[in-house]
Length: 148
Image 1 (cartoon, one colour):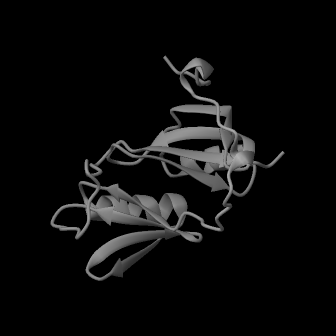
Image 2 (cartoon, rainbow, N blue to C red):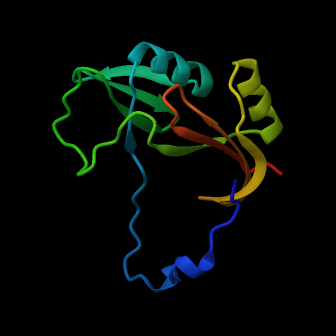
């Protein structure tokens, strides 16, 4: 069953206005894992318009100002999370620049099945309208639109 809201009883309250230091940091990159580079390169290029780049013998997808570093068959990353990311176990949201209906059409034109949505969700910029789908390995992907 799909749940569209978190249970507030399990989420502790946080008052971010009381923090003493406000860092000017932003997210630079995250890591995803894939089971087949060719298939995933084509997917992220065609669906997100990602630039597929090689960096020090590794593959990365550049989407806007963000980057997805890609772990996959034959790669030996120098640093890994305590529990390394595996194909299909990530959950990522990308901002869609237009109306969510355009995002749905974009996905359908590429043969991508929308699993859930459109639905109202909370994102980095506040409430938006989202749709959910998966990459070839099963990673959960979300497109969120803040267009009114």
